[in-house]
Image 1 (cartoon, rainbow, N blue to C red):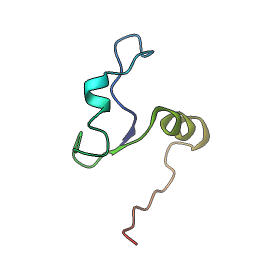
Image 2: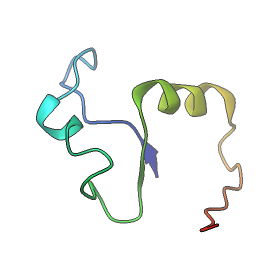
Image 3: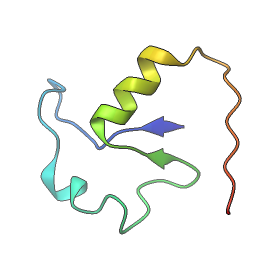
Image 4: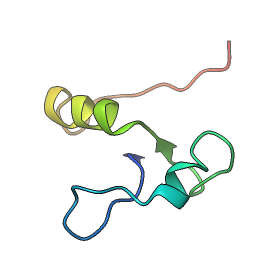
Length: 57
């Protein structure tokens, strides 16, 4: 799953405590945690079912 940082119920404010952990601690197993802007880009530009390959270069 691709997702951004956790937001409050109104989705206009992110939870700062959790945002500070982004990139430092896993937020959930198997997920890719993105910035809000990147998550929005993926949501609006990639259709459901798009193949994603995660590679370690």
